Length: 253
Image (cartoon, rainbow, N blue to C red):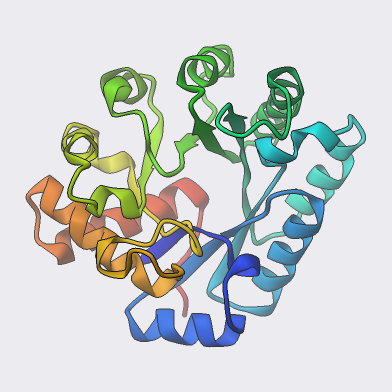
């Protein structure tokens, strides 16, 4: 298994203990996500220090009020690190009011341009902003690899699949009320499906209400496997291969 989206710098406990638990649960690798400059720098440092960790770096929409044009420099500088595999998470979040839509769009546009220019995947955060997010992505270069993190737009699954986007499913796919997410997964191209924890957030059903961690991605994988009508081992092989292909992550020696 690969946890394709976690925030190791926000998880409780030491990173060493978190990774030990993940390894014991069968998690081979983790992509840790930066949300702003300091978080992105910590994510790259963790990737540098731990063979099984990779990083994505960028500006989260909730931090977009502080975004300046000069931030392009540090994003590009960090993106040059060999273990940085994506730009983001970035996008639009209208649930929170920490940045105006215009401020969010400015940061979003810049990161779309960076990812396209560098040929890197773009990790998308979108919350109560589906229409604007998809409208902006429609203008992005057609060869840009777009990953919809914590997939949350089941009503648009046919559209995003037709666009060639990737979808990563998190703990909510295991929640009993979310039959629409499970149906969306069952109707998404299997060669573009990933699993994630979004740790320490969105713990899957068996751990719901507790801090999440990469080891718990096994529960999300089981939920996805059930939605797909596949054995867990088959879903594991599928999502692991997809994650490696999207991010260019090689197996550990």
